[in-house]
Structures are given as C-alpha cells and as structure tokens.
Length: 289
Image (cartoon, rainbow, N blue to C red):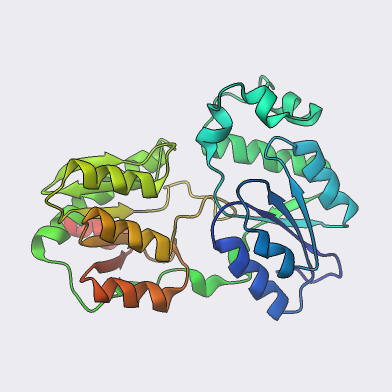
C-alpha cells in the first residue's frame, strides 16, 4: 500500500474496477493520479481522483511521461483493454498513431509473442526503466476477492458440480497456455473457451451454441497468475451475461477472483436462480478425482 506523499498512479482500462479502486484509495487518504486509456476508461474517473489525463492505448511514451511528471513511484493497473481492437484493427498504425516508444516496444525482438502475460510483463519492465514499480490494486481492497463457498441461495446440482470439476481442469489448462480464463461446459462437453474476445463474448457464444441453456461457466486464475494484472473479475455485467445466455451456474476461484459489487451480484443471481460457487484448487481437483 502507498505510504509516501507521492501519488498512486492508476492506469485505467474498461469496466468498473478502476472506479472501485479510485474510491477506495480516496477513502484511505491516498492521492491518486489516473491515466485513462481512451475509448476504454470511464470518464467518471476524472471526478474520483486528484488528477486525471487521457492517453491513447498506443501512447506508451506519453503514459510513462505523465506518471513520471506527476511524481508517481508506484502504479496499479485496473480494467480491461480490448486487445482485439488494438491488434487487429484495420489500418491500426493510422488509427492508433503509436508514439516512438510504443513502436520500439512493439517491435522489440525480445517480445517473443503477443500473449497477455508477455505484453504486460514487458510493459512493466518499461516503467521500471523510468523508476516506477507496479503493485496490485488488491493491496487497497483485498476484500474484493471471493470467499470460499456457495455464495448464492441455490446450491449447484450434482450434474453442475460434475461440470464445474470438468470445466475447472479445462480452464486451468487454458490459463497455463495464457489463452483465456473461462470455459463454458454442459454435460462434460466444452461449449466455448475464452480467447482474445473476453469472458462476456465467450458466455454469449456458449448461449448461441446451447439454446436450451442450463450450462456452467467456469472462470479461474491462471496457474501462473500475477496478481498485479489480469486478475479474473466478475461483476453485475458478468451476471447479466450469464442470465441472458441461459447459464445456470458460475464457478470462480476463491481467493483469486475479484467480485465487484458483491451484494448486488449475489442478489441478482438469487433472483434468477443462478448458483455462484467459489472453490479453491484443492477442492476442484478432489471432486474431479
């Protein structure tokens, strides 16, 4: 947790998580300087922090310079970046207009692939060159992590429990390969796996493929999960996608998954009869065996 007078640097992407962290830091009396990624971050962040600036996703030099000028020594990264918009946008060089530092970063020969972990760890190294370290936003809000147990009124059925165990192994393997964190399963058949499109689109695709509904969504941390970034997160939007797609169970990893607006999430799930289960790895493996 930030202890000096230097402001906490908040690098904000899409979703509610950056707002929650900004609110919590303010309640603790920690000054926050936020750089919001254009077309991703919520404009409301400007009212939740001490100082705010926008930057394009390909303006790595500008982002680092802004944090450095603000006197930030520690940075936290929150929110999603829709990577497919960056990697595969038509005429991406013209639309993104990357700065020189970003171009050097992107075409560095040491960048062996474009997996999430590869890109994010390389970016963290760029910040370190300028004297800034990345920390986990969970240092400010550890109680955002899911507690162990069935969080909703409805317990999963025996069939759903079997699908959770089966899907857990699949999701962990996808995470080990740094492909995605979520798998949708019905009757021990994989309906959809998450890749670059993200969890919400994965759930929607499973619903399209299984119009009868009644399937299970499993979302877990990677075996090599770095809690500074890309921590699996669910919130009201996730539950809405689960309901709309016809899923009946959502399984997450206890102690390694962020649950935003937990009370509201559980209330919505209860109203629609969705079971939310938070397991730890040992329990999932025991039931799978």
